[in-house]
Amino acid sequence: MSRRDDGFAAKESPGVGAGGVREGVHGERDGVLLRVSGLQVHFEMKGGPFTRRRSYLHAVDGVSFSVQRGSTFGLVGESGCGKTTTGLAIMRLIRFTGGHVELGDLPVSELSGEQFRQLRRRMQIIFQDPYASLNPRIRAGRIVHEPLDLMRIGDPAEHDERVAELFRSVGLRPEHRFLFPHQFSGGQRQRIGIARALASRPDLIVCDEPVSALDVAIQAQILNLLRRLQGEFGLTYLFISHDMGVIQHMCDHVAVMYLGMIVEQAERGEFFRNPLHPYTLALFSAVPSLDLRVKSLAGRIKLQGDMPSPIDPPPGCRFFSRCPSAIDVCREQTPALREVSAGHLVACHRVTPGGGPPV
Image (tube, rainbow, N blue to C red; front, side, top):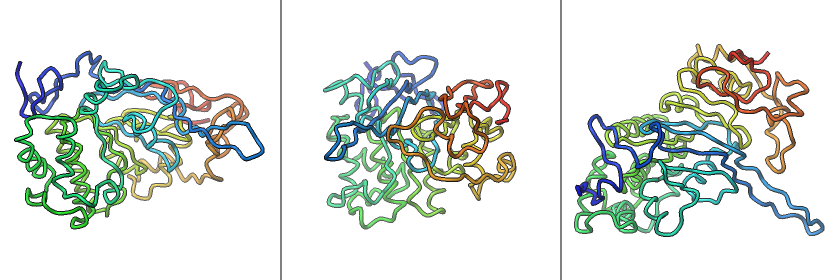
C-alpha cells in the first residue's frame, strides 16, 4: 500500500493528482464532497421565573446545499443570519438539532469516538479573528505542530520538517516558528491559522470570515494565498462572509442566508448577473464597492426596520416585514426554495417561474 509524505495510507485520505485535483473520497457521488441536508440548530432559551414555556432561538432552520470537490461555496448574509453557526455545526463544533451532514459517503452527523477523530483530519476551519484563535502562550511552530501530534499524523520524527514546510507554503519563514503570536501582524497571524488548518492535509476547509478583521491591503494577500493553496492542494472551501466583493472574488457557487434560511442560491456568474430575491437585491444595493453594472440591477433599495427576532419566528416569509415587494401570501406561507432557472434557486413567492424578478 503506497503512503503519502504525511504518513497516511493512500486509501485513507485522498491525494493530489495531476493539475492539483484530488482523488475522490471513497463513495463520493457526482464529484460532491460535502452534502448538507435540512440542517437545524436551535438553542433553547431560558424562560423567566414565572413561566414554564420553552422558547427556541432558530439560528439555522433547514439549510440544504452541496459542495463540489475542489470548488468554493460561499455563504453570505448580514450579521445574525446564521452563516457562521452553519459552518460551526458542519464542523461539529456546536451541536445541531436536526438534519444530516456527509463528507463523501461518511455521515459526519452520526460518527463518534475514534471514527470521528479520524474524520477530523479531513475537515478543518480557519477562524475569523487571528488575534483570538491562536494560543498566546505557545510559539507559532507549536501551534501548527499540535494537529500533527493530536491526530497522530505521519512520522513524529518528521513533524518539525513538515511544520517548516507549512510555514513556507503560507508565506512565512521557517524561523518564524520560534516566535509567539503577539510578535506577528494580523495578516501573519492569519497565515499561521491557515498553516494549522493545512497540517492534516484536509479535504474541506471552512473559512469563517477569514479576512474581515484585516486591513484591506492584507485582505487581498490572504485571499490570493487561499486561492493559490486551493490550486496546489486541491482544497474545497466553504467560505463564509458578509462581503459581496470577497464572495464575488472567491466563490464558484453562492448561497444567501437570511434569519437562518437560504433565500437564494446560484452559480457565481448567474448570481451576480441575475439576482432575484428582494433581500439579495438589497444587499447588492448596499455594497459601495460592487461593480456598478451589478448594482444597477438592484437599483437603490433601502430596507426599513430590523431583522425579526429568531426566537420562535412567525409563519410566512421571514423577510416579509422588510420586503418592498411583499403581499398577503408572504405573511401566511413560508416560500419554498425552488429552482426558477437552471441551477438558480430562490425562496420568494414573487419571483416568476422563469426566473423573472419580483413583480
